[in-house]
Amino acid sequence: MVHEGLLLYANVICTVLLFLYIYRIRRLIGFQLGMNISMIAGGMLAITTGVLLIAQFPLQFAPVTIITAVLGMVVGAIFGVLFDYQTMLTGWANGLMMGLMAPMIGAVTDGSMLFIWFMELSLLVAFSFVAWSARGT
Image 1 (cartoon, rainbow, N blue to C red):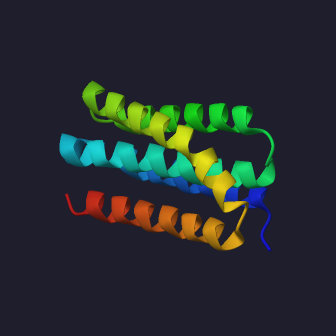
Image 2: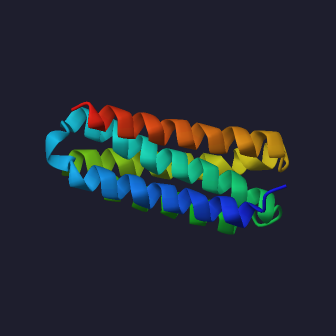
């Protein structure tokens, strides 16, 4: 069994690496793809973080919800600002919504390792699609 803290750390590292890659080629990416990138980055990081944190701290609903919502908003906005302000707003809003929903989903699954691994795989696949689609521009 992998500790949730290590998965959180790995998610942050993957997000930073994706940001650095997108930052280098941001001028080649159109605003529509940029909007999808900001939504995926903020949303997926917020939902996986929320599920992991609620599994780690099962009775701390309010702090976990606040942390995941803020994290989703910040990451979505940071990825969005690479392109334009409309994309920043979309990434911010999507990160907020996913951050608010993530602890609820995590609480319902009751820390199931199968679901946690499913969310981690979804994050990796989503980030891989982002990198692959950005490379094709």
